[in-house]
Length: 269
Image: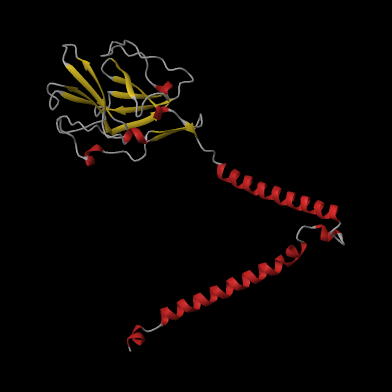
């Protein structure tokens, strides 16, 4: 069992989502961050040594290398403690963007794919970019929308452009966006509820008045109003309610003041 770093060394990033304001989309990557294992894929080096690529989202990987950790690592299976290196670190720059922002056309891939697929214009997904401590090497993770993939997802390819940019194609249902809530949603919801209340009240008045008119159950136009006696008495009901509430509030305030001003020694006497 390879060693694992402690939870405090994972440097978990609290906010793990991307909001594409231009296209009105939101991507929640929290399930990928909270996945208990690192995402990994096995390959072979130029000398036919077995390599394991490990990466994580919004946190460092759990597999240490030279007593440190990062967001993407390259490990030799024969000597994972020292035959390893990190290609990016969470402590450096992390950014989110669209798939179209990815650097394209890598020159090599340990998995036999010489060039990454160009994203379609309608391809849904989010691009995560990490930097190395030397600020020269970059790792870009393309979390591509795949509703049919088993959660949390799978690595379809890893490729590199020289030795400076590594790109991971990661197919996941968590790469599928949801619409951004409109800033006016709360106001529009209130307006909808208010409109429904007004429409129902108008329907109540019209249908009630028509029913009373058909039955001839009125002596004046005012009596065509449904439950007219209730509506006449409503101002009085409201006034009595306000008066009762004010009296109760005054009583409670006086009781609290009395307790606060009471000498505690009086109760012991």
